[in-house]
Amino acid sequence: MITGVHAIVFNSDADGTRALFRDALGLPFVDAGGGWLIFALPPAEIAAHPADEAPHVKLYLMCNDVHEEARRLKAKGVELTRPISDESFGLVTAIALPGGSELGLYQPTHPSPLGE
Image 1 (cartoon, rainbow, N blue to C red):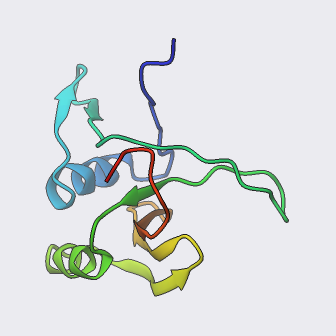
Image 2 (image 1 turned 45 degrees about the vertical axis):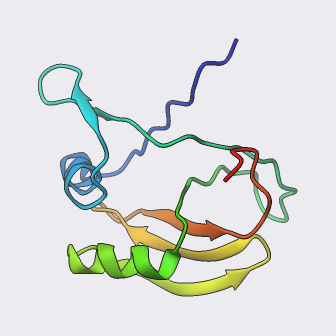
C-alpha cells in the first residue's frame, strides 16, 4: 500500500534550499537529526504525460492563485525563473532554488482528484 510521496531535491546548495522551504514557503518540518530537515507537503497528485524528449520527472507546487503566490514569494526575496504563462493545464511559473535548479509552481485549471 502506497502511503505517501517522498520527493528529494538534489542541488549544490541544500542548506539554502532547506532555508527557502522553511522560511519562504513556510513548510512544516522535522529535524531528522543533525539539522537534516524533512518537510511536509500538502496533499499531492501525480500524472503521466507522453514525452517528446528524454523521459524525465518534474515537480510542481500547486496553489489556488499563482499571481498572489508569486507576489508573496517575491516579497520574501524569492526569484521566479520565468514569467507566469497560461499552459493547457494551468497557469505556470517556477521558483529559483539555491544551487541553480528550479521548482515549478502552478495554479491548475484541470479537474483534480483532490476535490479542490
